[in-house]
Image: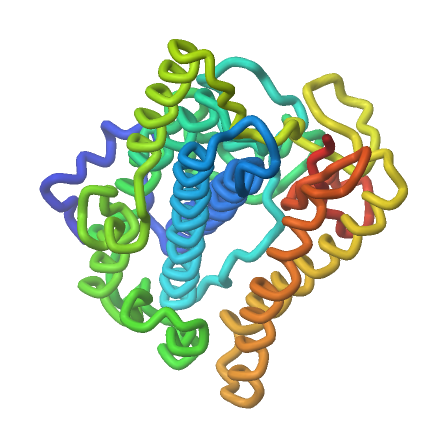
Length: 371
């Protein structure tokens, strides 16, 4: 029987110990869901920021700073999607399936800054504080079934998360401990050829193949690297901590000089294309043209997820290069331009981003935020 490795006091963490391959798959799947959710939160905040001074409320100098924040937040989302890709290889290595499912953002949004789970919120001091907590792996998380119950959604998937006190770092510490303490013969049963070729998605050496304990731990170490390390500082122009400081200074300077500083487009929290029965802070989409454009975006995003799911689960080399090319083109040539276009729509300007609906709605739908 494997012994607990030093440095991983599994009993002290607020997550049940992992002793089986199935338990480790459950934790990796939850981590993948979380990384997808946080990536969407980064993008939502980024696209809520204005592009240039012509939108009003910004000087040219301020607009340059805000564009830098947009790039930083977008880079943060790319980091999270790279985490998702790495978690997919970890899942495949131990016989699990990559997790490319719709994020479950709670429609029961709360003003409490300590609420668990990422949400879709425009750029603000509070939003940056939330993202900074995820950047530091300090944010609270919940088990998938607890999150589902908040959303009116039922799930039967097992969980190793304890309610109330589990943080992101606890989740990853427990996953790391699981790879230390579980027999390699039991764990690494997935065919190595089923893992994604990083060249297909232009990831180069940033995506590691996972074949044994050493490569699994190296992959997890890359995911949990802080923004002060080279792995992240090379890809992110500025961390959320830098943005927070610059934003506070910009607000203070504007107040002292009586110069307008309005970097954020007037977008709403937790958007929805359908009216929910739940009480909570959400923004319904009611403009017909906005809904039509949103449907186009939603279908494009759904298609992209299907392509990525196939790329990360298929061991057949045939057509994978074409599928990967299609997924990348869809991101750059359809999804991003539609997001920008929706923010510029008259009367009801909307920001397209992923937001799942309760499962009683039997069709896939991705919601957008309304102005």
